[in-house]
Length: 247
Image: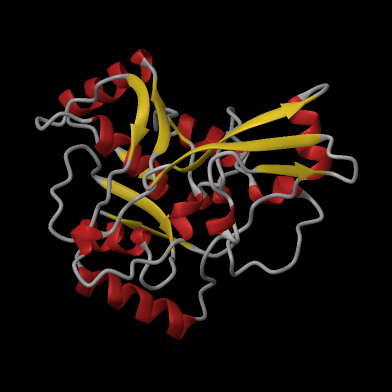
């Protein structure tokens, strides 16, 4: 929200030419940003689609004519401020091929916050404040992942979003605990992964928490070498770019 200093608790924001949608700022926390209460008539989702635009990363300057381009084929629950971009590589046909080859698919939910686009400016990484993000892991999915671990099968996370969910709900022994909640986990070099054994991930912005996560997983030097190779070979970066498989 800009200018943020003017939007204190009690401020009311109007959307639409006739104020069809109103939002009152009722609280502010560093972890979650501003908490607002919407007032409207009719269907809330329809109003959002009518008045709003897809929230895109700052490096995408043109509005998408088809908002489904910034969406995965397996998305189910509305609420995320950004697509889990590693998932954009998957088609229904590819998912079917993976299933036929014996790959077991499991879905978790994390509503990505706008904080994912915020660069890390702190000299001491542990001082960086992550925005809290809502997650959900069903009992069935937790049981399936735990069984895979017990049987020695690999847990491969599609995107840093999935990694943050899994590592947030894992015990120190690497067991997945089902449930819902909010996580502000910040994974950077030195972190010890409890569940994730491989990651499919896109190429990320410099100074981003996502780049630090993959560096924590694969090692800074190996990630820099991968990025150097990607630049030399003309790979595409960021949301609509290419992906890599790291283990």
